[in-house]
Length: 413
Image 1 (cartoon, rainbow, N blue to C red):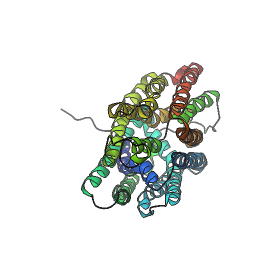
Image 2 (tube, rainbow, N blue to C red; image 1 turned 90 degrees about the vertical axis):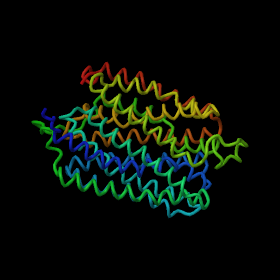
Image 3 (cartoon, rainbow, N blue to C red; image 1 turned 45 degrees about the vertical axis):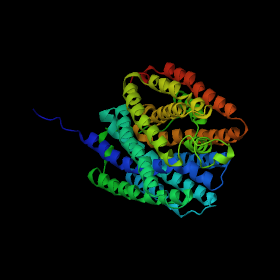
């Protein structure tokens, strides 16, 4: 029996998936302990929310400029490579930050986001070219599943590091964890060069349009920006989530609440690993659903993910916390697969990097404002923070529905 041969586009997606796997081992491994790491340096919830949100704001805002630059120069690979190098190497550099260095840590986080801003429009555009042959939802979903394996392995690797490195303070152990993340960072960069060598011109996967169309802010695209912006505003950054867990569930800052630890500080990375597994499954399920049902898939994912804050912040129960983190993972899966797929169908090939840049810029501004506000409100009233989070995410749903009515082609591509 003859085996079905993988298309060049699919091989490209799989190779880029390996790049993303090692990249997510680095980035998501860091994200699994970053909030607790900043808390150990003395940063408050408002500060953590501000730093996280500012990093996302700068990173997402710059994507517009880099997206325009990519469309004008069509230098997809150089921007992708430089961005990956800056983004990845900023993570292990956090190991060099001192006990009270939360300001320097914040600077490094922002630098990493700048690198991410450089790579993301070019990377998303490259994947969208392959998606023209394999299906946008399917392509982004497969990429997300593979890189979420890395997002799972990264936190698990740090858990094992914590398990076997028991000497030193909690801060010293966390610093060592960031140093270990240099290994997957270098592996990702190496695989990126391998992929570039094999596929120097991925844009050839998608036929050139008969004429180059300029980017236009059409109404259906503006509606999509509004809906995704509300979702971003209400989607609590994981740094705040894990800071809350470190305060209320572990012994890291238990003196703040007087509660006994419900989980150990060493298991914190495993919580994020679990969220990443849910993210991978959700991305695949909803990505494939998008190719058949369009934005309806995003509506369903948003409705499922929106109540995660209620489970994470309003109960002191580990099983309920796990449910909340799983729902948070569903929201992340929707962001990384469906949201990018929609842009590829709303923006022509010749202006797609600009479209991704505009989308990411809008998403990042709302993420920053939401992270900052929700981090501030957290210190005043946790129930109020949860209410704002849920309300803004759910408010995105009627806007998505409105966008669906504007153009039937976005519902079933």
